[in-house]
Length: 147
Image (spheres, rainbow, N blue to C red):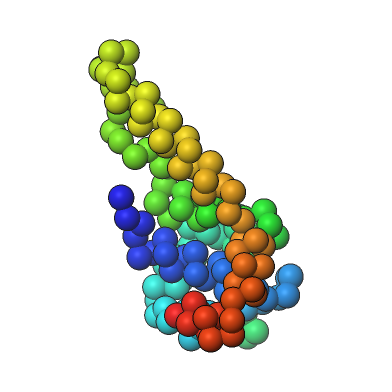
């Protein structure tokens, strides 16, 4: 499994926004420049985050984007789910399409446990912690991680 480019860029955009003062409107052009994302693609990847109440937008002169939630309340799982949808890992875990083999297949339980641990790991990484980790990096590493 590999996350999509949209998810990677969404994570980078939220990390950029998390480094700004709380409540500050962040211009699209600044996120695009800092994260090397095209304006059209940034708009596309922020739409699900706006819908999910993670990011807000303000139109017009002085408009841009802002975090609705505090960085400590936003996890990598939130961004992955917003961009990718529910995390299943395998067809047999989709609730709307129950697997006929789940009661006698040893893999069903394994996939369920892997999914649970994967989601728990993504939930442990909030953006306040990621910003704090980035601040510990030498300046040249922090500059390169913006790209």
